[in-house]
Image (tube, rainbow over all chains, first blue to last red):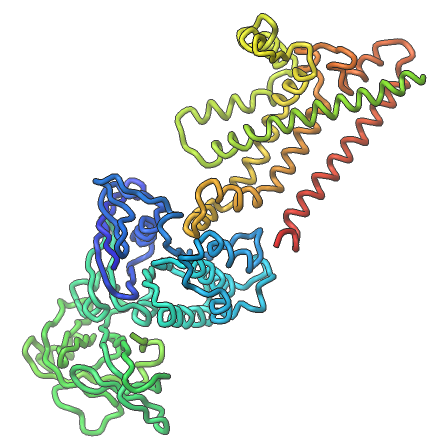
Length: 362
Length: 230
């Protein structure tokens, strides 16, 4: 349980952050410079709010009115910085041990050998941070934070300074972390791909503070938030469950409230929950199911909203069962099909548009 | 010449004692001052910065004269400290104090530079891992700025060994008490036939300075290089 309701000063601006969540992974999502880092620094105790309250679990970390303000070292909150910030004068082992040594043995619940094995650090223990690659550094930083046995892990854009292959590598480690240790994670990012893959709960941050909070599917399905979630990234998120694999065909079938989706094979077990991100520009519309088509996914739904025109384009929102699908089409097509709220329509999605970057485990 | 030889060791010993005490005593306040100037924001910071650098720009004689006025037997501070048994005027402790004041800006500058070039968020990282502010300073900041401290210690040690103007003005040139190497060399150049002795002491100065340089280089390398601290 994380409860944040604070006013923060950021230079000459003030920032109002307010959200509470029980979710194992909550993402603070917003553009660079929107104040996400300031919010996590306040949770860690590295900046002091002007007023308000911060609670994690049963403990009040900050309460302006009651004069409570625990120093960072007594909050037991792990912090993984964007640029790792390893101690340059210590070896990898020294870095990993730093927080572990300062944690009373009774409060340690993370085993060092387990973390070292999990993060693949065994062969690097005697090296110094200066000789490590960016991905290795970030793995050490994650291990270091973990070994202090924190009650909450803050990850501030841990992938931002990495190249694409390293990003995928670390993302996989963060997924393992989430599933293995059960430590609640606050994940800061401006990348919708990362957020969709990792987070259950999303807090949208814009200049001036938090503007909306909810499940990833809820927030991404709201057209009114698009100016903040990003026009280029417009789309929706569907919560689904793995139904079966067709390994010969290279496809996995996912069931969701509204039908079935076929996607390129996902490494998963039937029954597992996944999140699928459907980008609006990957979704086409038809008034009747096309007879001969390469579209593997034809989803019947009802138009619930047509956005105001943006240049030559409009975004059409469809309710497909309990899920939301957004399609970006030209104004011309919209007029020709006479799309308006209440109208039946079919959303057409190519299976190949839903590659492994679009599917995340919930 | 037998007596002059014994005297040489006395001068060297006194010089090393004065320089060591001057550096040792000024290191803690220099660390605090450098930390304040590098990290803190407070009103009057520019003034503090200027006062710290004063010994670097003022004639040393002026510093020595100021110390004499302040800490002489009749000075405002000197008369306060005298009943407590603390006297500086015309004592080797006074020579150490004069050297400390003259070396202080060099020490502060070197430490401040290395503090400013260090990512101060490393201290934040230490705090989130459970270290209090003091522990974070001792286990993270201090080892990282050690090369800077070593440089500062060398510079101020060398400055102390060479200190002349402030010392001779404040505590005079008393053999066995305040007569350090430079003062002794000066003394020998003032008497006929003293050139040989002055030359010998000069050579000693060169050796001590080179040794100090080597020691600080070794220390800096040790704290930076691979396998320094596990």
